[in-house]
Amino acid sequence: MKRIIFFYILILFNITYLFADEIKGTVIDEEGTPLASATVVIKELEKGIITDSKGRFKFTGLPKKEFTLEATFIGFELATKKLT
Image 1 (cartoon, rainbow, N blue to C red):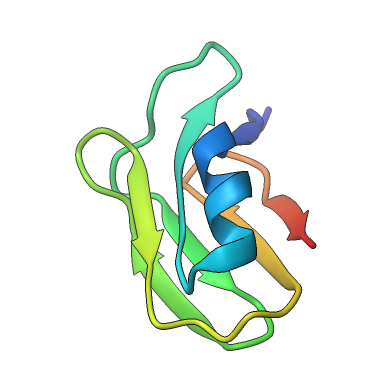
Image 2 (spheres, rainbow, N blue to C red):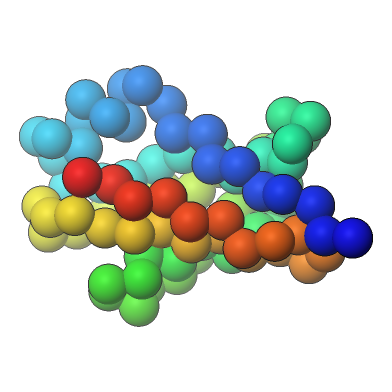
């Protein structure tokens, strides 16, 4: 049975996103454990990154628009988060 991945996007991110060109957050499992080496992709830009040892990711140099983030990790279901 596949487990579920959750995106934990800092409240600071939500405020920062309106004024800056970066997206940052953490990928965690359903128990709140950070997932190191998870893949996070911005679907519209086909740009991806791997999370660090604490499950954190950061995209910089982005245009200001809506994005869909997708996170994948072996043994887990695909997680999707729409950022507006």
